[in-house]
Length: 343
Figure 1: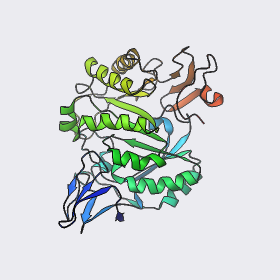
Figure 2: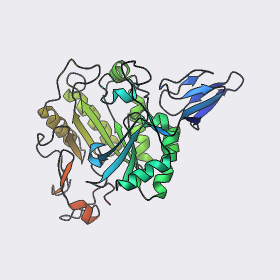
Figure 3: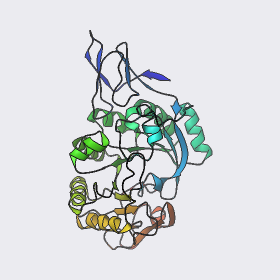
Figure 4: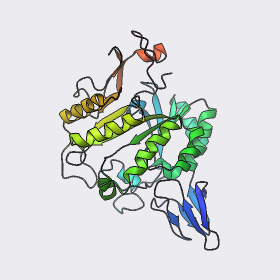
């Protein structure tokens, strides 16, 4: 279930060396070898990439992705493949993402076509298809194939990603992608390298690239006690997002022990509130606290930054009130335009 990849540069035709540009690792892959993600490999000088299967398939509320400024209350058909370019110690989808590098992981795959996925989304009356669960960047050719059919069917397309991108992959995705959620996991490069297997600057660059490409962007930081929960680090994250745009929604969400990181407890709700307050004080217009339904004051709601009217009221993934859908993204009280995809 593989096809020749498109996100590749031939580095040495004689020795059949290929440079993959699907993610920030930019692996130089020799003949017969695989990239860090384990799913992109060099077969006789041709980069082979996955196609026509899913490792996970589920209907989710759009708030679970999370997207809070995209069609509130609507459902999304979420699909994922296997593998990842990161190896996060606290990955909540590790049985899918780490299948090819951790013997303890393991998930069967289901053969499926792009047309099958679109038909399933229609049958569930979903508004969008989202590539998620594992890292979608490493299977971008498959995602674009799915998204071509998705667009033809009049539905939206989404990426839920670690943000370890490249200019090449964002340009490749840009014509086919409506919304992109990026995890900004920490503002410490040493933590990216030690716990995640990545590089901070790649993620910071991708946040800016996606925003400048005109793709709707929301950013999430999972607050891990003792790892990235200091006020200084939260200020650094908020200031960086603000430097790109004050209108990028920032989600600060609660960690729970998982995979290899079982040595600490869940994130206290007061830590989430502190993080959200820092985001607002740093000048971000839309900050949300998640994974703690009903325990973070009003930080689950969308409020107008001008008049503070509550425009979308939420508890967890449940939308209780949504005034912006009816108004087309305009605050009905002060007429401020709220950025997002509301209809």
